[in-house]
Image 1 (cartoon, rainbow, N blue to C red):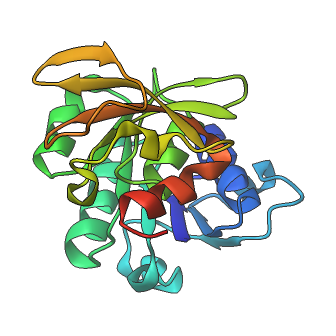
Image 2: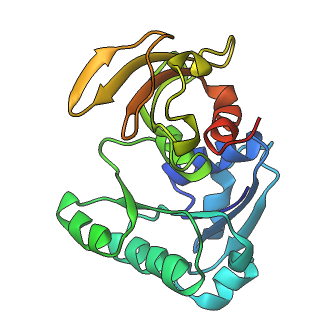
Length: 217
């Protein structure tokens, strides 16, 4: 994926290092040139000094080709502007904005933006939203090696048994939410339209799970 991160503070730096190490193409934008000193020596992405609200700066980052953008500056106003421009003007398919003051969150939601509240969210969660849209992480274990992921059963798997998600080393079905009621699930449970399934997933296997949900092999 080609990802753009606006703001190279603590969270932005951590996220940039994490997604870069995972093999994604990363560009980090910050107004302060010294901010990039926080990045790991192993960071191999691009850095651009400039104001992320300015279109020429975003164009230098090749925003038109971006798969995702995270606005993570210390200013809610700036994050809102950057995120709206990315979504509305450049049609970036996946945009995440950090919110410092929860009182401002409504403005972001009204703009149709995914948000993370700085007091309770981490770079790992932002990475999951950016690189695995459509998979809702409920919790993780250890150093995020294993995750509990909630997915909506896709149409092509309706009528199949839950055992289709029992893949050794990849994922296992744990529970199902159906008509507002949750229950433990086993491989013999038949999947129905509208089911929400909770899976225990090896974090490194998330791309395989996405392919499966999309109807691939």
